[in-house]
Length: 353
Image 1 (cartoon, one colour):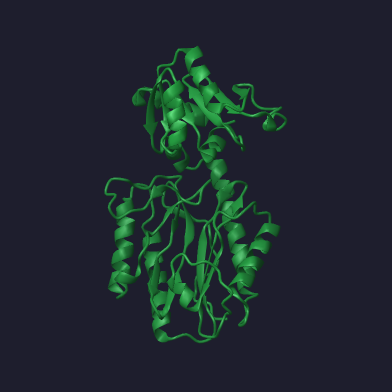
Image 2: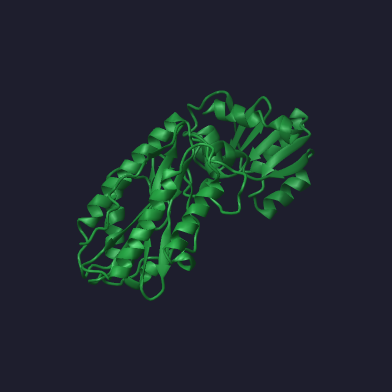
């Protein structure tokens, strides 16, 4: 149970004009309470209630007594009872709930209902020291797994074989589960920014993009490397160097206070100057942590938001030229008080196997 995080949330109540907040997102429930399972978390200005069912009774035997547990199958009914008993008048809730859940709350709740977006997510954005340590460990895991997999790739293997071998290896290192389906995209598939794996066999003159993310102690990494098989054309080499130059240029700007839009602008302009502007068709990066995509969002049209110390972000430029090949390079970076710390450090020099 992390009461500092709950106190942070409670400190927003006056500004939000609420006296209770309902947390239904499972990741946010875990972040605030440490509970992993089915249920909801109701936070008032003085108390916190975890409402779940008896499947989790033994798991919660030694819970912190400051967290009040209610066992029931009727989660929202229990929320309504607490709101009524405490005489609460305005309950905020996460706008990600289903319409069916909203309709039920609207029917049974005596208080007013107010939806909010990213309230708990904003708290999760800046990582504390313990979270940073876990993300550093996750990055080292990613480096070890990548170094292993590139040492095993051979012509004739399939994308699926390589992805399965990588998944198996990283689980044996202690990873919990994948945060997205591992991507091994070779040849023409490398031109698909979010390809899936196929039975395509690796061939000479292929580019192979390997993009993978796994949870370690509940925190995920997200890393991408692109390698070459045998000799590749001068244009593909130029594309690779352009992507790497773009990534290095953007990373060099990272520090607290820099506008997120500036990172996106520099990425887009650098790739455009290299002659491939129309072939960069996704964002430059995003936050990571308990989820594979979380705040901050790095967007060209966000002229107000800036990086903060404690942000953990990815930087992932890519160029995808139809009928030729695609390159993406992605790293995880911690924003520090004075700049940044790389969390993923496997080689980015063009590997030719």
